[in-house]
Image (spheres, rainbow, N blue to C red):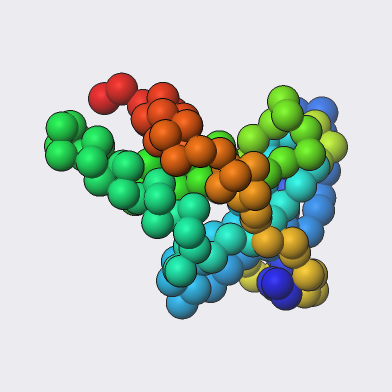
Length: 147
């Protein structure tokens, strides 16, 4: 997916690395950018008509019936990043952007400084979807935070 990139600045003392970071417009309903928590992989994800999203949403909705304090949308989005396919088993995906140099969370992306357009891979869920139905459900239930 081609996505516009903007200048990001790592604000960690001793780093200050500048790099291109993707940003979606406010009109990209159901679409998200996910970054690995080590800053090495950035991907695109569209939840609309996505089978993994639907399965996770059903399980979260069931949990929400028991615990009305559960924030459904943010919980589903967090779980998507935890069950997505990844090359490094020690990492996971999050909607935060991480510095690829020092691997700390980046808070400064300048939406006024467009740097270009880059083609990003789409988040996949082959391993999760290949699990038996009961294992998928137990996995998601174990990852839903206690409120």
